[in-house]
Image 1 (spheres, rainbow, N blue to C red):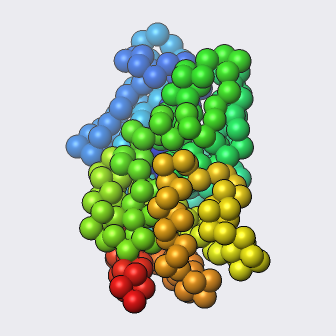
Image 2 (image 1 turned 120 degrees about the horizontal axis):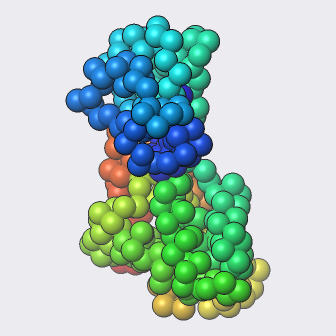
Length: 316
Protein backbone atom coordinates (compact mmCIF):
# COMPACT_ATOMS: atom_id res chain seq x y z
CA UNK A 1 0.00 0.00 0.00
CA UNK A 2 1.64 3.24 -1.20
CA UNK A 3 0.19 6.27 0.59
CA UNK A 4 0.86 9.51 -1.30
CA UNK A 5 -0.39 13.09 -1.20
CA UNK A 6 0.05 16.43 0.54
CA UNK A 7 -1.79 15.60 3.77
CA UNK A 8 0.83 14.02 6.01
CA UNK A 9 -1.66 13.71 8.86
CA UNK A 10 -4.05 11.65 6.72
CA UNK A 11 -1.14 9.49 5.50
CA UNK A 12 -0.15 8.72 9.10
CA UNK A 13 -3.76 8.09 10.11
CA UNK A 14 -4.34 5.63 7.27
CA UNK A 15 -1.00 3.92 7.92
CA UNK A 16 -1.97 3.43 11.56
CA UNK A 17 -5.39 2.16 10.53
CA UNK A 18 -3.95 -0.39 8.10
CA UNK A 19 -1.41 -1.54 10.68
CA UNK A 20 -4.07 -1.95 13.36
CA UNK A 21 -6.37 -3.81 10.97
CA UNK A 22 -3.78 -6.38 9.87
CA UNK A 23 -1.52 -6.75 12.93
CA UNK A 24 -4.09 -6.01 15.62
CA UNK A 25 -1.65 -3.60 17.27
CA UNK A 26 0.58 -0.65 16.48
CA UNK A 27 3.39 -1.69 18.81
CA UNK A 28 3.61 -5.50 18.75
CA UNK A 29 7.37 -6.05 18.03
CA UNK A 30 6.69 -9.52 16.60
CA UNK A 31 4.10 -8.33 14.07
CA UNK A 32 5.01 -4.71 13.31
CA UNK A 33 8.31 -3.44 11.88
CA UNK A 34 8.92 0.27 11.35
CA UNK A 35 11.67 1.37 8.97
CA UNK A 36 12.99 4.87 8.30
CA UNK A 37 15.11 6.03 5.37
CA UNK A 38 18.21 4.21 6.66
CA UNK A 39 16.27 0.95 6.92
CA UNK A 40 14.91 0.68 3.38
CA UNK A 41 17.39 -2.06 2.58
CA UNK A 42 15.65 -4.30 5.14
CA UNK A 43 12.18 -4.12 3.55
CA UNK A 44 12.43 -7.54 1.90
CA UNK A 45 13.92 -9.24 4.97
CA UNK A 46 11.28 -7.81 7.29
CA UNK A 47 8.48 -8.72 4.89
CA UNK A 48 9.76 -12.31 4.68
CA UNK A 49 10.03 -12.75 8.45
CA UNK A 50 7.42 -14.83 10.27
CA UNK A 51 5.75 -13.60 13.43
CA UNK A 52 6.66 -15.74 16.44
CA UNK A 53 3.13 -15.32 17.77
CA UNK A 54 1.46 -16.09 14.44
CA UNK A 55 -0.56 -13.84 12.17
CA UNK A 56 0.39 -11.44 9.38
CA UNK A 57 3.17 -8.93 9.83
CA UNK A 58 3.12 -5.27 8.80
CA UNK A 59 6.22 -3.49 7.52
CA UNK A 60 5.65 0.25 7.85
CA UNK A 61 8.15 2.32 5.84
CA UNK A 62 8.42 6.10 6.34
CA UNK A 63 9.65 9.03 4.20
CA UNK A 64 9.56 6.92 1.06
CA UNK A 65 11.02 8.22 -2.22
CA UNK A 66 11.83 6.64 -5.58
CA UNK A 67 15.05 5.35 -4.01
CA UNK A 68 13.00 2.65 -2.24
CA UNK A 69 11.99 1.05 -5.55
CA UNK A 70 14.58 -1.75 -5.71
CA UNK A 71 14.09 -2.95 -2.09
CA UNK A 72 10.33 -2.96 -2.73
CA UNK A 73 10.73 -4.82 -6.01
CA UNK A 74 12.78 -7.49 -4.20
CA UNK A 75 10.18 -7.77 -1.43
CA UNK A 76 7.30 -8.29 -3.86
CA UNK A 77 9.16 -11.09 -5.64
CA UNK A 78 9.03 -13.19 -2.47
CA UNK A 79 6.03 -15.19 -1.36
CA UNK A 80 5.78 -13.29 1.92
CA UNK A 81 2.32 -12.64 3.32
CA UNK A 82 3.28 -9.41 5.09
CA UNK A 83 1.59 -6.10 4.34
CA UNK A 84 4.05 -3.37 3.34
CA UNK A 85 2.78 0.16 4.03
CA UNK A 86 4.79 2.91 2.33
CA UNK A 87 4.32 6.46 3.66
CA UNK A 88 5.32 8.85 0.88
CA UNK A 89 4.10 12.42 1.45
CA UNK A 90 4.84 14.65 -1.52
CA UNK A 91 5.85 11.78 -3.82
CA UNK A 92 5.01 12.70 -7.41
CA UNK A 93 4.68 10.58 -10.51
CA UNK A 94 7.86 8.62 -11.04
CA UNK A 95 9.45 5.18 -11.06
CA UNK A 96 8.05 4.04 -7.71
CA UNK A 97 4.46 5.09 -8.35
CA UNK A 98 4.53 3.68 -11.85
CA UNK A 99 5.80 0.35 -10.52
CA UNK A 100 3.20 0.17 -7.72
CA UNK A 101 0.31 1.12 -9.98
CA UNK A 102 1.30 -1.57 -12.47
CA UNK A 103 1.90 -4.33 -9.90
CA UNK A 104 -0.98 -6.80 -9.35
CA UNK A 105 -0.30 -7.04 -5.62
CA UNK A 106 0.16 -3.33 -4.85
CA UNK A 107 -2.00 -0.23 -4.83
CA UNK A 108 -1.61 3.54 -4.47
CA UNK A 109 -3.93 5.51 -2.16
CA UNK A 110 -4.10 9.30 -2.48
CA UNK A 111 -4.20 11.29 0.77
CA UNK A 112 -5.10 14.88 -0.02
CA UNK A 113 -6.15 17.74 2.22
CA UNK A 114 -9.86 18.08 2.75
CA UNK A 115 -11.50 21.47 2.64
CA UNK A 116 -14.91 23.08 2.46
CA UNK A 117 -17.87 20.90 3.35
CA UNK A 118 -15.78 17.72 3.60
CA UNK A 119 -13.51 19.21 6.27
CA UNK A 120 -16.47 20.62 8.21
CA UNK A 121 -18.19 17.24 8.07
CA UNK A 122 -15.04 15.56 9.45
CA UNK A 123 -15.01 17.96 12.42
CA UNK A 124 -18.73 17.46 13.01
CA UNK A 125 -18.32 13.67 12.91
CA UNK A 126 -15.44 13.65 15.42
CA UNK A 127 -17.44 15.80 17.84
CA UNK A 128 -20.60 13.73 17.37
CA UNK A 129 -18.71 10.52 18.17
CA UNK A 130 -17.86 12.08 21.53
CA UNK A 131 -21.48 13.13 22.11
CA UNK A 132 -20.72 16.82 21.55
CA UNK A 133 -22.71 19.28 19.44
CA UNK A 134 -21.39 22.44 17.77
CA UNK A 135 -22.62 25.72 16.39
CA UNK A 136 -22.28 25.87 12.57
CA UNK A 137 -20.16 29.04 12.69
CA UNK A 138 -17.77 27.33 15.15
CA UNK A 139 -17.21 24.44 12.75
CA UNK A 140 -16.70 26.79 9.79
CA UNK A 141 -14.17 28.89 11.70
CA UNK A 142 -12.20 25.85 12.86
CA UNK A 143 -12.12 24.38 9.33
CA UNK A 144 -10.64 27.62 7.99
CA UNK A 145 -8.21 28.10 10.88
CA UNK A 146 -6.51 24.70 10.95
CA UNK A 147 -6.37 24.00 7.23
CA UNK A 148 -6.59 20.52 5.76
CA UNK A 149 -4.03 18.48 7.71
CA UNK A 150 -6.02 15.56 9.07
CA UNK A 151 -3.93 15.07 12.21
CA UNK A 152 -4.25 18.75 13.20
CA UNK A 153 -7.99 18.74 12.55
CA UNK A 154 -8.51 15.57 14.59
CA UNK A 155 -6.36 16.84 17.46
CA UNK A 156 -8.25 20.14 17.63
CA UNK A 157 -11.67 18.47 17.39
CA UNK A 158 -10.78 15.93 20.10
CA UNK A 159 -9.49 18.73 22.33
CA UNK A 160 -12.79 20.60 21.89
CA UNK A 161 -14.72 17.43 22.71
CA UNK A 162 -12.83 17.13 26.00
CA UNK A 163 -13.41 20.79 26.83
CA UNK A 164 -17.14 20.61 26.11
CA UNK A 165 -17.72 17.19 27.69
CA UNK A 166 -20.33 14.64 26.67
CA UNK A 167 -23.62 16.39 26.04
CA UNK A 168 -21.90 19.77 25.73
CA UNK A 169 -21.94 22.18 22.84
CA UNK A 170 -19.05 23.99 21.14
CA UNK A 171 -19.48 27.66 20.24
CA UNK A 172 -17.33 30.12 18.31
CA UNK A 173 -15.63 31.65 21.36
CA UNK A 174 -14.58 28.20 22.62
CA UNK A 175 -13.16 27.25 19.23
CA UNK A 176 -11.12 30.43 18.90
CA UNK A 177 -9.64 30.03 22.36
CA UNK A 178 -8.93 26.32 21.88
CA UNK A 179 -7.50 26.53 18.36
CA UNK A 180 -5.05 29.23 19.29
CA UNK A 181 -2.35 26.59 19.85
CA UNK A 182 -2.77 25.11 16.37
CA UNK A 183 -3.12 28.35 14.47
CA UNK A 184 -0.45 30.14 16.51
CA UNK A 185 -0.96 33.85 17.03
CA UNK A 186 -4.32 34.57 15.48
CA UNK A 187 -3.98 34.66 11.71
CA UNK A 188 -7.20 36.65 11.74
CA UNK A 189 -5.39 39.45 13.54
CA UNK A 190 -2.67 39.40 10.88
CA UNK A 191 -5.20 39.52 8.05
CA UNK A 192 -7.10 42.38 9.65
CA UNK A 193 -3.85 44.27 10.24
CA UNK A 194 -2.99 43.84 6.55
CA UNK A 195 -6.29 45.28 5.34
CA UNK A 196 -5.94 48.13 7.85
CA UNK A 197 -2.57 49.02 6.35
CA UNK A 198 -0.41 47.93 9.29
CA UNK A 199 2.13 45.81 7.44
CA UNK A 200 4.54 45.41 10.36
CA UNK A 201 1.89 44.04 12.73
CA UNK A 202 0.44 41.87 9.97
CA UNK A 203 3.76 40.24 9.07
CA UNK A 204 4.68 39.62 12.71
CA UNK A 205 1.32 37.96 13.40
CA UNK A 206 1.52 35.84 10.26
CA UNK A 207 5.08 34.78 11.07
CA UNK A 208 3.97 33.58 14.50
CA UNK A 209 1.00 31.74 12.98
CA UNK A 210 3.24 29.93 10.50
CA UNK A 211 5.76 29.09 13.21
CA UNK A 212 2.97 27.47 15.23
CA UNK A 213 1.98 25.19 12.37
CA UNK A 214 -0.44 27.08 10.11
CA UNK A 215 0.40 26.25 6.48
CA UNK A 216 0.43 28.54 3.48
CA UNK A 217 -2.59 26.93 1.78
CA UNK A 218 -4.72 27.34 4.89
CA UNK A 219 -3.54 30.93 5.26
CA UNK A 220 -4.46 31.99 1.72
CA UNK A 221 -7.88 30.38 2.14
CA UNK A 222 -8.36 32.37 5.32
CA UNK A 223 -7.29 35.50 3.44
CA UNK A 224 -9.86 34.79 0.72
CA UNK A 225 -12.56 34.30 3.36
CA UNK A 226 -11.56 37.58 5.06
CA UNK A 227 -11.74 39.51 1.79
CA UNK A 228 -15.07 37.91 0.91
CA UNK A 229 -16.52 39.03 4.24
CA UNK A 230 -15.26 42.56 3.69
CA UNK A 231 -16.82 42.47 0.21
CA UNK A 232 -20.17 41.31 1.64
CA UNK A 233 -20.10 44.08 4.23
CA UNK A 234 -19.26 46.66 1.56
CA UNK A 235 -22.19 45.51 -0.57
CA UNK A 236 -24.51 45.97 2.41
CA UNK A 237 -23.08 49.43 3.01
CA UNK A 238 -23.83 50.25 -0.63
CA UNK A 239 -27.43 49.30 0.12
CA UNK A 240 -27.59 52.04 2.76
CA UNK A 241 -26.57 50.56 6.14
CA UNK A 242 -23.67 51.73 8.30
CA UNK A 243 -20.31 50.03 8.49
CA UNK A 244 -20.99 48.94 12.08
CA UNK A 245 -24.34 47.39 11.12
CA UNK A 246 -22.78 45.71 8.07
CA UNK A 247 -20.13 44.07 10.27
CA UNK A 248 -22.78 43.04 12.79
CA UNK A 249 -24.77 41.16 10.13
CA UNK A 250 -21.85 39.03 8.90
CA UNK A 251 -22.12 35.26 9.39
CA UNK A 252 -20.30 33.62 11.00
CA UNK A 253 -20.21 36.62 13.34
CA UNK A 254 -17.02 38.63 13.69
CA UNK A 255 -15.24 37.86 16.97
CA UNK A 256 -15.94 40.77 19.31
CA UNK A 257 -12.27 41.70 19.66
CA UNK A 258 -11.93 41.97 15.88
CA UNK A 259 -14.97 44.19 15.22
CA UNK A 260 -13.01 47.47 15.41
CA UNK A 261 -10.32 46.25 13.03
CA UNK A 262 -12.81 44.91 10.47
CA UNK A 263 -14.79 48.15 10.61
CA UNK A 264 -11.62 50.18 10.10
CA UNK A 265 -10.67 48.01 7.12
CA UNK A 266 -13.98 48.74 5.39
CA UNK A 267 -13.14 52.45 5.26
CA UNK A 268 -10.02 51.66 3.19
CA UNK A 269 -11.40 49.15 0.70
CA UNK A 270 -13.95 50.13 -1.98
CA UNK A 271 -15.97 47.32 -3.55
CA UNK A 272 -13.92 47.39 -6.78
CA UNK A 273 -10.62 47.14 -4.91
CA UNK A 274 -11.89 44.18 -2.89
CA UNK A 275 -12.94 42.45 -6.10
CA UNK A 276 -9.44 42.86 -7.53
CA UNK A 277 -7.85 41.68 -4.27
CA UNK A 278 -10.05 38.57 -4.24
CA UNK A 279 -9.08 37.68 -7.80
CA UNK A 280 -5.41 38.12 -6.93
CA UNK A 281 -5.83 35.96 -3.81
CA UNK A 282 -7.36 33.16 -5.89
CA UNK A 283 -4.41 33.33 -8.28
CA UNK A 284 -2.05 33.10 -5.30
CA UNK A 285 -3.87 29.96 -4.12
CA UNK A 286 -3.42 28.39 -7.55
CA UNK A 287 0.27 29.37 -7.57
CA UNK A 288 0.72 27.81 -4.11
CA UNK A 289 -0.47 24.47 -5.49
CA UNK A 290 1.11 24.49 -8.94
CA UNK A 291 4.50 26.22 -8.73
CA UNK A 292 7.69 25.25 -6.98
CA UNK A 293 7.64 28.33 -4.77
CA UNK A 294 7.01 28.00 -1.05
CA UNK A 295 3.33 28.80 -0.37
CA UNK A 296 4.18 30.72 2.80
CA UNK A 297 6.38 33.16 0.88
CA UNK A 298 3.75 33.72 -1.81
CA UNK A 299 1.07 34.44 0.77
CA UNK A 300 3.23 36.78 2.85
CA UNK A 301 4.13 38.74 -0.29
CA UNK A 302 0.43 39.02 -1.18
CA UNK A 303 -0.50 40.23 2.32
CA UNK A 304 2.32 42.77 2.27
CA UNK A 305 0.83 44.11 -0.96
CA UNK A 306 -2.60 44.42 0.67
CA UNK A 307 -1.05 46.35 3.55
CA UNK A 308 0.69 48.77 1.17
CA UNK A 309 -2.55 49.42 -0.71
CA UNK A 310 -4.47 50.07 2.50
CA UNK A 311 -1.72 52.32 3.84
CA UNK A 312 -1.75 54.38 0.64
CA UNK A 313 -5.52 54.85 0.88
CA UNK A 314 -5.22 55.77 4.55
CA UNK A 315 -2.68 58.50 3.74
CA UNK A 316 -4.82 59.76 0.89
